[in-house]
Length: 150
Image (tube, rainbow, N blue to C red; front, side, top):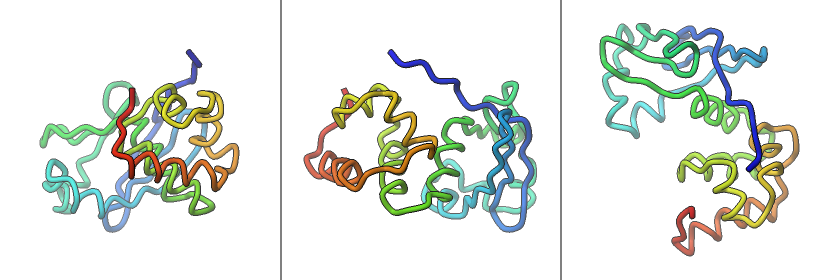
């Protein structure tokens, strides 16, 4: 099993609209636009109100962000993947990261589903390596066959 350091947050700040500025402990910074998530996930709907959205704080020692008054939490790993998908340099990377998010796959599950190493999945997920078109197509094919992670 491949080991990978899980992402952890150092800071979170609400920004204009429905955006969060995320600062990870490794120094990475992203602005994550959340308006689509607020519309598409009923559990996040209360955050559509600006005052509620601004109540965001770091939770669980940086492993999540939370809105304590609303009992809503989002893990740092999910936030990082969402931010990477939004910042993806190309469509192949976006397809791959969104596929992983939709199916909530670990590195090992994604590697098994696509027939590549967990190390490759880690490099593609972090943006260290460009996602090949064949891998993006494999993600789409996997979904069209209706398969699920092992």
